[in-house]
Structure formats: structure tokens, C-alpha cells
Length: 322
Image (tube, rainbow, N blue to C red):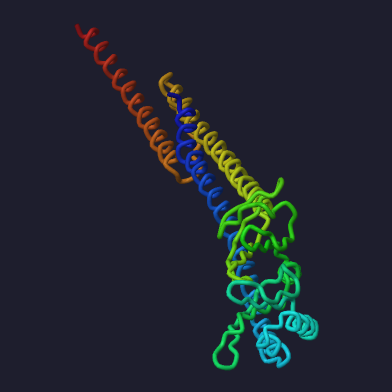
């Protein structure tokens, strides 16, 4: 395995693999963060819708008090005159600005005037003289359509109002027959929505479900944009790391090439050329030691040459003596 191959493998292990793991982790965190924001947004819409529903229930309670105290209306109920009670209920609904007035007696609707889509009612059992029951009075101050439009106006929330299986109002088309979970997702055409719902009282024994919807495709677009931004930053960092790695690799290869060339000259008997020393790193220290070794070898070679000359002179003198 060559030195360059080892450097490449080292770079992959310490940079590419960790960066890939970080990229996966960043993408997951971005998705979780944006989904959390979407859930928080639709949850905030649910809180606003619940508060608005409660406010209309309190308004209905004020109207209920005035209807229950109306002498003409209660007199007609005591007289069991539904026509007179119905006429008076129409007048009261118009004068008090109510959406619906209903009276049930024994589970049967005795009086029912106003909009059938009215929601957020308040109720009270009416009791006549002698403790006789006059029925259960229910009053509403808002219709489902008005409630949905007001919720859209004050908070830009899409909403759907249902009573049982019947859709009372919706600010979106195509969602009337969709199941509305307490918290989840629903697909309307080509658009996905996050849904948060709550149940409230309706007329009679019905329960009203109010669902708030937030555009999930906007969340998906935000996730894509943030992932692209994260991917761009990671790629830029990776390219920068590659540039530094290439520069370091070339610097190391250049230093090793100088040491190799010097070793070859040394092997050929050339002790005169020293290695250039740059910096104070380990390669510089290695070059200094290499230069010291070269000088010592040159010195030893000169000493050996002198010893050989002396030895040759001694042998020549011995031969002349003989």
C-alpha cells in the first residue's frame, strides 16, 4: 500500500465517514424540528379554537339567562302552547342576536328556531311553578359558518366543524368526508395537513368536533430548504477538508521525496548536498538528523581514506625494507 493510498484511507476514515454520519443526524434533526413546529402551530390553532368556542358558549349563557327570564316565553311554555312559544322565540332570537333557540321536552323538540348549524350552546332545565319541568332550554350565539370564518380571520387557521357524521361548516373544500383524528394528518387532494381536534357540546345529545388544520406541505418545503442548506454547508466543509488534505498530502509527499532523493545520493556516495529544512515539525527534525548522519558518514569516509593511505604507505615502506 503506497503512502498516498494510506493518506486517502486515513482521510476517508477521519473525515468522510464522520461527516456522513453527521449529515444523516442533521437531516433527521431538521425533520423532527420542523414537524415539531408544525405540531406546535396546529396545537396553537387548537387552543385558539377551543378558547373561541368557550367564549361563544359564555355569550350563549348570557342570552340563555334573558330568554329564560322572559315572561311571555315562559308563560307560553307553562301553557303548553308551542305556537306562542315559537313566535316569542323568533322575536327573542332576533332581538338578542342569537343563532338558535331550542326547547326539548322528554327528548322531543318542542321549540327549534334559528340556524340548524348553530354551535357552542348553553343549556338549562326550565322549572315551572310547583316544580314541574318545562323542558330543557338550549341557546346558541354563533353558527358553525360564522365560527369557522372568525377563526380563519383572527388566526389564519383552516377549520372543520362536525356534529356526529354531519359536516356543519368547513373553510376547506374536499375535507367534509375525511376522518378527523384528535392529532394526526389528513390528505386533501394533493395537499397534506396536520390536524388537531377537540370535542365540544352541541344541541341535544350531540357532540361537536372542531378540527384545526395546518398546511403540512409548507412544513415539507421548509424541511427540504433546510436540508438543502445543511447539505450545502456540509459539502462546502467537505470540499474545504479535501483541499486541506490535498495540500497536506502534497507537502508530506514533497518532504518524503526530498528525503528519498537525499538517501539515494547518500547511497551513491554523494555527501555534499544537504536537505533543506523548513519549519520545526517532525519531518524537519528528521531532515536535521539525516544531515547530521550525512556529515558523520562523510567524516568517517575521510578518516577511512586517510587510514588507507597510511596503511598503503606502511606496506610500501615494509616492502622497500624487505
